Length: 110
Length: 118
Image 1 (cartoon, rainbow over the protein chains, first blue to last red):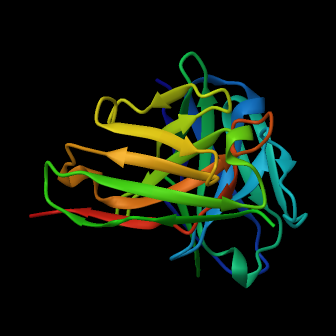
Image 2: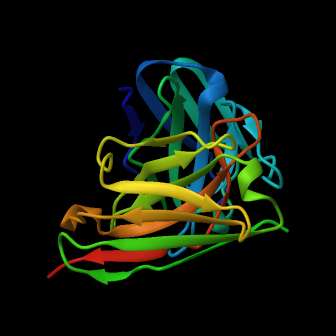
């Protein structure tokens, strides 16, 4: 079973700064199967990035994803107040299907 | 507009059973891969189960043999039958639609809280 480890656990930044969130897999993951979600308190997760680097519908251009193999990154170029939330990476494994999430990175206002 | 609305959560004793429902609108449940994902209080996300458009079902090891996913095509509704519930099953349960041809979740319900406690 592939384990996803996100770092840092908490990231303290100010609006306007650049955020870099990491997701490391215990084994190589197909880039096609790596996604990122944003979750705000009391809300359901929202899909941000799929296929490691493609933005989901309606996601602002300041969000970008990159990486391959075991190392993936979510970058928020200039933080807006509404970006402070918890972010999760997620991967898919087949035969049988299994979906694994990282433990999350909390992005908080400094 | 795609909408998912879960219901059926509540307080249940250890060893008890509960059935969650997820009513969908704006799309056809039976034509999509549909999952349940849960989140224990203050914790991260955990995938629970999926039903494919063809009817195949799959489960996380943590719930295998205790939970059953199903759907009612006439009601456009997804279900999760939970039995032999344990304290560690306490969580908000979300239903989620898998994106077409992509193994990620592009639409989520608002969640329903299940509390397993005596």
